[in-house]
Amino acid sequence: MNSDTRKLLEAVQQGAMSVDDALLAIKKEPFADIGYAKVDMHRGIRQGAAEVIYGAGKTVAQMIGIVGVMRQHGQKTILITRLSPESAAEIAAVYPLDYRAEARCGIIGDLPEPDGIGRIVIATGGTSDIPVAEEAALTAEVHGNEVLRLYDVGVAGLHRTLYHMDDIMSASVIIAIAGMEGALASVIGGLADCPVIAVPTSVGYGASFGGVSALLSMLNSCASGVSVVNIDNGFGAGYLASMINHMEVKK
Image (cartoon, rainbow, N blue to C red; front, top):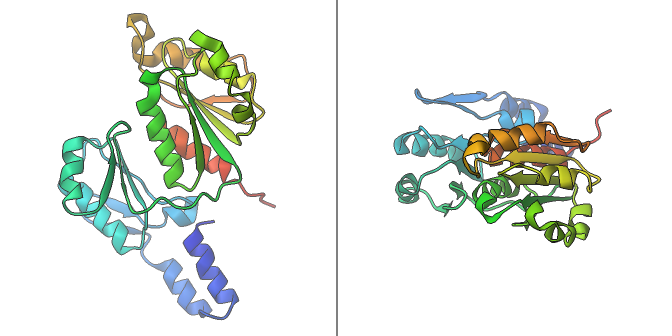
């Protein structure tokens, strides 16, 4: 459940807020229509995580406008993905923006304290996969997760993967990120006792087909418990890992 909604209900339980006032707060307009965007203000209530801004294709003015609406509605931490350095510089002139160039992500506000059930481990096959991994890691951290990064532990030197067996076995979710033939996901999937999210990257030579080769390898993994997101989709992997790491028993 969204933490703000939980606080609202707890206030009613404790007698600090009336039922009518709480109902009014929940009934407020579920989205803000600013012409070029309908900012979803109830996503946190529905899904437990607030809306994220996808920066590619948006103008700086549009992103600044969306950020403004989110802040007006009390969103404390805002993530912008696929954000160019030029756009980041302009946004930073208006709002305090922490720009991570390698991940192409911008963060407005403080990272929350981790409140997941465990730790998310993010492993890459090579150093060239780190930009996608950082997008995944920052997404997970923005959504309240402890993240451990294991970079350059690919199958070209399998001993590097096996060196981190304690870390692999301590994870509640693992994100395995690799280009080339994408074998890292199968290796980790055969070692770990938790869900593995595989991310194919566009890293590789001609016959890798921009990540399609790794995608097909991961989809055909012999290891059980491996699921696959789209090519270079670090955000999607980080978000899904966070959802798994925040699962609650539903009766």
